[in-house]
Length: 193
Image (cartoon, rainbow, N blue to C red):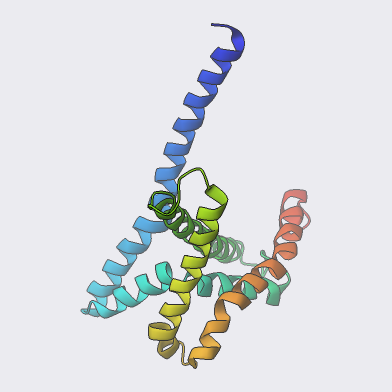
């Protein structure tokens, strides 16, 4: 074996191990913890309804959470706001990024699941990744629209047409909040908060 083959084998072993460790970490962080929270919420309320509603909004409509976090960033023109209470400021900062990262992870997980399903269906094959993931994204949006039309619009006190605007405004607000996230990160790294 020459050095290139050894590096390639070592890199692939490291890459697979790294992906598995962080894959399990993200699954625990963004899927298992919300499920545990939903169980605790149901036990506290002595009804299964609040837990099911929480899981539905978390997993079937992550764009609403993304929209709320993005609007908070746009409203404050930053992700980190100093109010004098250091621990409170850090907690709000972490909670904001938790909501953004959790929503993005759930969205990408749904797209990957649907892309995998399309890749292993008789009408497609696994080598057409772009088409499979595009169809996965369309399927995710379709399920989101169905969830908003059938269930969530009554919870959000909106008409069906207004609730259908949520995915588009969520993506638009996330894109608009991105410059504020970058400028806040520069301030935090530069120490000019």
